[in-house]
Length: 410
Image 1 (cartoon, rainbow, N blue to C red):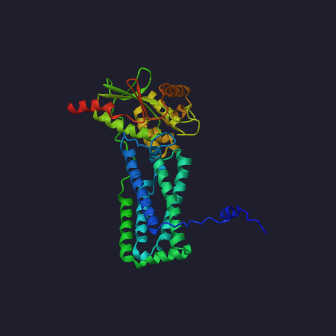
Image 2: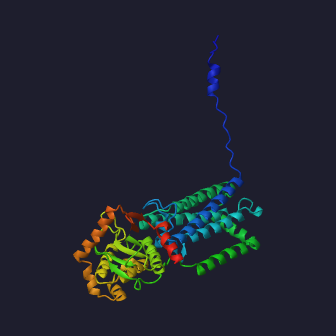
């Protein structure tokens, strides 16, 4: 007679399979709402980036909250020539792209779409935006050398949109891509009563924006410095403005620095508006690896040689004219400074300018400017020395406010 094993029941319990919990997919509305939220977030970020791009180019004192360092700096990205494409800032193209996707998503939510239509076209649009994100990220890394965290946020939105729309297609539109795309187009044509006006309005708005959008990023000089009094300090540094000023500003600049050019134009306006009150003393601080010891990689290539041309012009009483021309030339094509063109622009001899690039005393002058800047703790441009205090990036409003208030009361 077989003995009953008291552990049989225990063994059987552990041997029995555990009941499997069925994972319920999210309802269609959750996916649809997620896509809608992502498109809206991308639109709002693009609007912020468009406003920031405008202020970077037009407001001398503006600095965005994400200008954190040399490598993480939204303003540096906005200042680069790559921030404008086909006559519009990339941020404006971003606004258009997300507005277009919102239109597509809203058609996806129409009752007649039956949770199936428009998602393949949505996937194509999201994939195109993601591909553009890869290109722009590569430009930031290889060409600009700085990243915009708000731009990176839009890249993440684009990739997440592709993932989320791909899930929607798998669960609610299990059709071959080409067939589904053709049916989506037919759905738009069938509903042309609504799709026609929507896309016509979008296309018209984009066309009018492209035609009439102001090119504010092409900063034009307010005038030349030729009519402003000039001179040289006792230690050999050129100045423009007042001979006996109420305020002296010593600037350390780089001719290929966008912010330097913007502040130069702004200060020219201030000097013209308040004559006899401010003197602007110029010092060179090219962020050029050939001349500046803190720059280890090629950066602002040629800005050191541009500084040598300005030093030569200063020794011949032509600093203001050369200073203006170099800032303007750098804004158009700093990679191809033509000595003959520069000489003709300011009334100097082209051969003398060529010799100036190899003139050792000029190089000593330039290196002294750089060393003095480093002793002051300057690591970037523009930087300003006022009453022994260094201001980097821009001039706070409180520095010029007393003079402006005094000028207004005169």
